[in-house]
Structure formats: structure tokens, C-alpha cells
Image (cartoon, rainbow, N blue to C red; front, side, top):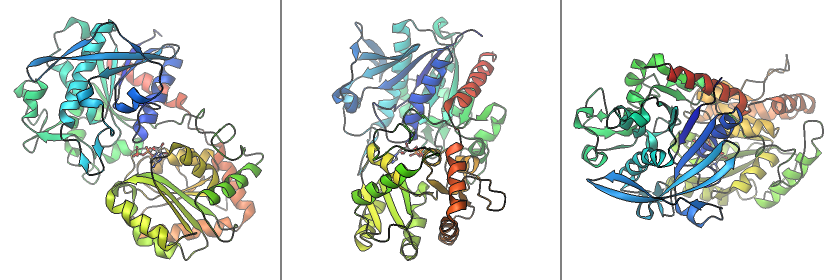
Length: 486
Ligand code: ADP
């Protein structure tokens, strides 16, 4: 099979910038595709975290000139080699990207987000021309890069440079669509005829994500279950009809895990390494976590961990309702997260109220995330919806048993443990209610008392393999499918 030329356009990529799972995927999927022999270039904006991070980047000799609001705006381009067949390119225009946040400050979104990502999406196409890199596939992700397929099917449709380029649009989270006043059509330079029901129009506004859904050659979501859910009114956020229309071109591909980063046998952030054969290190990790979060009480109580954006999506209304009752049970609870102010305040207060039993850190802290994965006994994800979810897969590898709501990728990856057959890797509940959550946690606590069965469950969990290779092969098929489209 001939190697493909692939461009991966993303608004966040670890280790350069991250707010959520998209950043993990945007590093590991391109790397997995490069390992399959394809030539892969990642393109992302040059945020302050990139400018100020200690990355070894090279400045390209020439700049790009991007059409924007009727003028040509210059942007510098930096790049770095990430491995064989894999490089990353950064588009630098400080008025747009040299800021402390990626998309927002705690008080709200940046008002010029549409400008920033119009500029970035169009800039990415000009960058490819400057590099002379004529891609077979441009893989776009979420609303920030969803205008790329729209540009290719309109302003650039007769451009010989992109004649054989096909686009993939991956929905990582349908709830964030990039909906802005229709005047941004002019800013984008896109033809107004695209402002229609068949195009970007959405209740009188311009919907970036809808554009990607309508005009990409193939659409994917990050789990099979979510690929079905997005076509229902409950999860479709107003775009379920559009997605149903494109059913023939929608695929669900589960994200993978980068096990060079998330593996208790090699993790350098944790108190002690451990494996399924020898779990003694996990106890040390638990002791260390108790110290970090100043947990006090019987050490035989299990720790339930959570690491998450503090958003409605993640089930924090349920947790807020359940927290008092949960802490009457024999357990510790640990929460690392940041996000919506109402939850930050609420859980800081709860942390004070339940000092010693509930450890709360309002922060984004990658190292502590590893320590929680290793030190906790169980991991809670009561999401209202979850396109894929990464932490439940990390948790499995760390023998930290997931307790999840049966939705999206959580439903695809977690199988309820059956004490009779000894099969299964966690616990899951269906109904979105605090009662269902508490009942399931009680069930997990009861099993935790049976050391033999619990150990069986931990071993099952640690045996699971969600490495990227399998998913990368599926994407490879999808890329070929896109290329077969005229
Ligand atoms: P989403 O992308 O919806 O936020 P995912 O489960 O797909 O959810 O990915 C979240 C990623 O972000 C995981 O790698 C998780 O560990 C990480 N993460 C979320 N919040 C924090 C935090 N406060 N500190 C450190 N890592 C976090």
C-alpha cells in the first residue's frame, strides 16, 4: 500500500497545548499513522504556551499570507520534527494566539474566537502550499478546524494543488459547535450561497461545525456508540438531522491510549511502579496520594478518583447531589479539575466541609493526574454524555476500577464485572440520577470487600489493551475510503 500524505489540523496537541482529550489524540493518532509508514504533518496555532515553552522550534524562512477581512495578513511558521515521517507546524500571529488561554478565560470565551479559527483554518491551507506538501488527506477536528473542508469545497475547489485532497472531519464533542453571527461569513470570505440549510446556516447564525459535517468527505466520531448517539435528538445538539442525512459517511473509531505515557510499569510521575503481577507499588502510590490530598482515616477505605473538566457534561450535578451521602460510606473521594465557576466554588466548599475524606484540587495538573490514576482504587465518570473518554482507559491500565455511566465511549469500553463468571472490567449504571450513581458505588464497595474477586477484577482491567494501533488501522481504511470518493 502506498504511503499517504496526511495533514492533521488541530487546535491543541500535547505537549504544546491542552485543554482536554483532543490534545492527547492529536499527538498520538498522527504518531500512530506515521508508524504505519505514512507521511504526517500536524498543524496547530502557536499559542503563548508554545512560545514560552522550552521547545526546540525552527522558524521557516518565508511567512504565509492569509486572506482575512479583505486583506492579506502575514503569519510566521515554526516547525519541529516529532519522529520519522512526523513533523508539527505552528502558525504564529500573536494578536490571535499569544494569550494565556486557548479558547477562553475563566469569565468566558474570547470574543474573537471565530476570527482566530477562520484565520487558522485558512492559514493552514496556505501553509501547505508554502511547504509544497500536497496532502492526500486533511484530517480536521472539532469546530476550530471544521472550515477547512468548507474552504476546499468552495474557494479552493478549482485549485490544482488540492485537486486530489480529501477531508476527514472528526467530532470530538458535538456540544461545542462554533456558532457565531452570520456576519462572520464575510470575515471568512466564504461565498454567501453557502449560508443555507445545506451549508453553514443554523437558525440564522453561522455554524462552523455544521459546515464540516456537511462538506467533509467522511465524518468520524471518537467511539461507535457516540456515532449512533449523535444522530438522535437527545445527543445531537440540534445537528442530529444533518448527521442522519450523512449516515452513509459516518464512522465511529475509538480513541486509543498512548501507553508510553500511561503505564504504571514505567510512569516516572508516581511514587512506585507496579504491574499486574506485583501490585505492591500501587499501595505506595495510594499512601502518597493520601498525603498529597491530606486524606485522613482508615487506610483500608478505597479512594475513588476523578480527573475532569468541571462541566455539566461530566455529571457534576449528580456528584454535587450525591456527595454528602457518598461520604457517609466507607470511602475517600479525590477530585482534580477545573472549569465552570459554579462547580469550582461548590467543590472547594465541599472539600472544606469534608476535609480529610474529600480531597479537592482546582487546577490543571498533568502530574497529579498520573498520581491519582495510580493511587486511587476506583475511578468515577458519571458523564451525561461522553464521546470517548480517555480516563476510564487510563484507569484500566492502572488497575483503578472505572465506575461509569453507560454512554458513548464509556459504554463501549467498560463491561460490568460479573462475580459469577469473573468477566468484566468495571461498573456502569444507565440512569442519569444520583441514586443510580450511589447504588453503583455501593455495589463496587461491596465487591471491594472481597479481596479475591477484587483482585480478579483488577487483573482483568490491567489486561485490557486500547493501544492506538487498532484505531490507526481503522483510520487508514477510512482515509482510503475518502480517497475513493470523486
Ligand atoms: P474531554 O476531552 O471531554 O475533557 P477526555 O476524557 O476525552 O475528556 O480527556 C480529558 C483529558 O484531559 C484526559 O487526559 C484527562 O486526564 C485530562 N484532564 C482533564 N482535566 C484535567 C486536570 N484538571 N488536570 C490534568 N489533566 C486533566
